[in-house]
Image 1 (tube, one colour):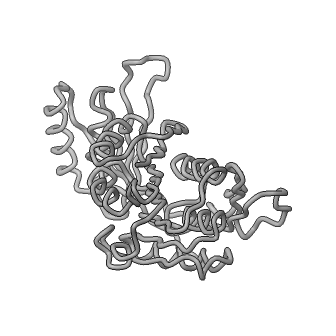
Image 2 (cartoon, helix red, strand yellow):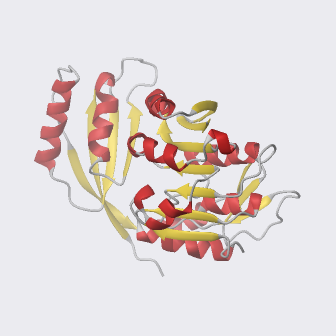
Length: 300
């Protein structure tokens, strides 16, 4: 039985010009960040930004960071922050109940509570919302699955890598689509554990090697390439920092080239992420946008 989870909510209201910068400030302190326009009919409306963390926030430190960031972006506004404890709720149990099956291309993602029929021709993925990111509901995950479904029509991958595997959903999709052995890596040991569990539950445990390690410096990842497919549904900043390593581990053009499916980034960050990968020899094949989240399909 899952235990209720305590969360702290950090709330602040900022001018539109400072929204992205303040989101970056909170992302360094929070497990999740969301923003909402105060007045949907006004393009210059302020934005309400919320962040959630499991530890009691440092109110003064956050306020100073916001004030300093206002100065950096040239915004003249008062920095204020509100922190309160969210009432405990059994998030996993609630998510399990609310998690409805979702179809993305040929992929049909459903939980253990689903007792209906799998659509004809679908690739089923059994997954319950849990302690690792990736249930198919988030726009970045959905964008990656859409890209994989499209690639399956014209490509045959034999040596794939899932960097930042989370729940293992992308690795499972790759293993089921191409019946290829795949390395699934994450810096979080819980993600590696959950990926192994989900792989077994989906009948592809023998195809997925889930490992925990520091990105491409991990021994299994570093020794497993070059890869003809790399999926990385993480965040814009780590994607940028890992672009050189991704390029080194992606199959070279003289050997047939490779494809990278990159996501976890907001549409506004797309040009920065794309540019640094282009500097390292990749080109854009496709852009997919879902609810403001961008998925990039790039290749040699």
